[in-house]
Image (tube, rainbow, N blue to C red; front, side):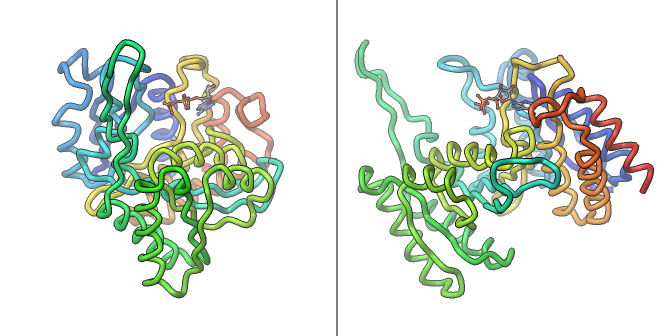
Length: 333
Ligand code: ATP
């Protein structure tokens, strides 16, 4: 039995976590969940958004499944997601976006992996109020972090039979910071002659993505562009409800949905658990439970082909009905 840290999050987090655990249980996943808390619930209980117990649990177990945790806008505690990435040095955020069978979208040839630097850029959280009318955010790009993420992207490309890495920046405007990122990507590209390399400015990349996404393979981006572009790529294959991801470093991996805590649909039985479920499927593969992972994938795709879908992807099933159908399909296998 593998011990995995579980963060049920808030907003729709608890409902989609329950749904995912149910499916994993039915499929026979051999997991001992180590439940921990973070975010508003932790602030109330321990006066900190990211308790040491939670971080230590992930350090110990090396694998976590994390549901979304709300980040208060403009005030309140710092993003737990960002803190967690820093504490555990989860320097790479990998967001694969591929068409899912039976989810119809404008394009049917999307197979893009967004590799996003996860520890610095504007997310370094260095902000200053200069005066009442002026605020300043500082964008940090370092050589170490840029080389590390570039190597991760090229290494990922080699290990996953990918053809090309495209570095995406705004180096024409942020000449020093994005320029440094680009320089590191170029140096790394030279070490991987078997992988094609190209560069694109982020604005052009967004336009190309919505016009001709089939041209892209692995995208390598600094933190902020990575955040934005990966929501765009999620939209290409059906939206946030199905977009999976992993935050990974040298020692730990935290699997999570790309989407946030969606407070607008909290408790309404409307949330699509697919993104977290697919993240959990990747987690099962990561811990070596491949048979269970493929079984779940098959049951999920069958459910979608039976046209049982939640509202965000054009169906009318409630979250609970969708999960019930997945479980029925698991039982039929
Ligand atoms: P964050 O800044 O925390 O990433 P966000 O502002 O991007 O959050 P989300 O919480 O991801 O916002 O939600 C964006 C929109 O997508 C909302 O309308 C929400 O209801 C919808 N949404 C997000 N996740 C899901 C889901 N799993 N199922 C259905 N709808 C979702």
